[in-house]
Image (cartoon, rainbow, N blue to C red; front, side):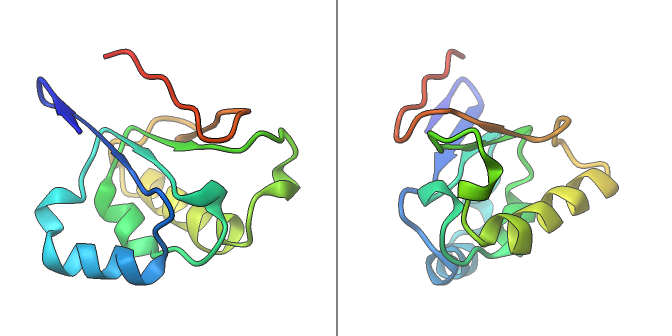
Length: 110
């Protein structure tokens, strides 16, 4: 979604293969100011897609405050992409992601 130049994207239930397909077919549409991650970060992710997104913020929809409830993709693919974005002085804020404390509800005012 785009509003006055602000771009918000969401992954729904996408996984690694759909990220790779979208990146190959529409690389110019991957970049966003805010990216809602897919499916509570369960399942495989494509780190290159996350890097290409180059957001200010990733939003993770997870009702638990305990980080152990996040999927394996959090440590394996997500955090390395976060670290890369920070190390390469990209747009990502610090820490670069927010966990909503709810499932499926995101409210953003632009």
